[in-house]
Length: 183
Image 1 (cartoon, rainbow, N blue to C red):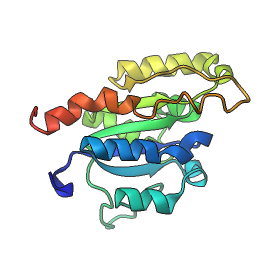
Image 2: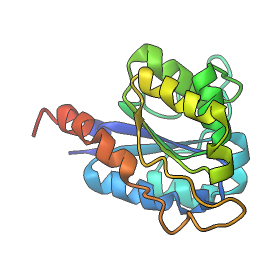
Image 3: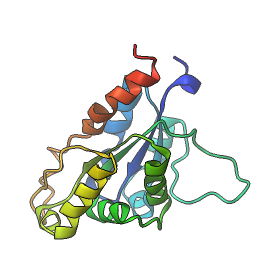
């Protein structure tokens, strides 16, 4: 399958310490047959190696809206994987807040019927906030596939080793299979 005919996956990356490891997800997705483009929240740009991500995907990292008349820098998404998904992004997305390109794409995905999977990365203190559970419930109600939502201890980097980057791919595998014609 050529790159132009590969199903295309948007990887939405949020500002979390583990975002630097997004290459793990990109490589796994490409190995499974996805073309990949990365959309980063503005704050996530400080956590990723933009040049390395662009070299790995063959596409520019998007973080800001394009101006009217500018060419579309990425193919349209067949599916979206949000990883790592932060407390901020999960809550804003569920509330319909579209103040960044990443959130705009996520909010629009529901109306477009674009299959979307999310792998949260929040600490236990954030997960205890009542808005977080309500946001996950709302996203589930919208058809968003939720990966491991196990919080890590607050004020540590303990969750990094246990974060399952490929959980979103497991959830989206039926979409890839269907895009390949059920093969």
